[in-house]
Image 1 (cartoon, rainbow, N blue to C red):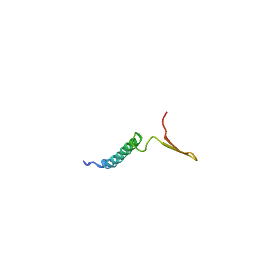
Image 2: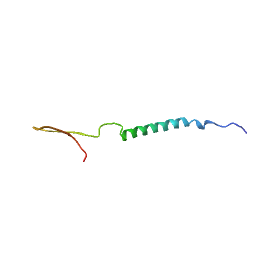
Image 3: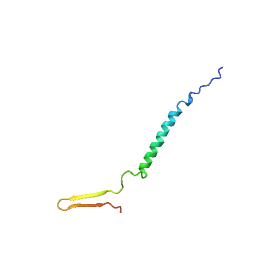
Image 4: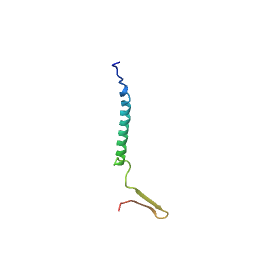
Length: 63
């Protein structure tokens, strides 16, 4: 009987770690965008143009 053993079981661990790291980074970016990452402004600007009157401008307030 041979005393040799296969040590090829670690060959897929590097790829699995790389994929798992990419998933963690992607989830971090998504969480940053959702929870206040600074993309855009939450206050919309409103501009209504009425012929003969001019432009009426303002911001939308919650309430």
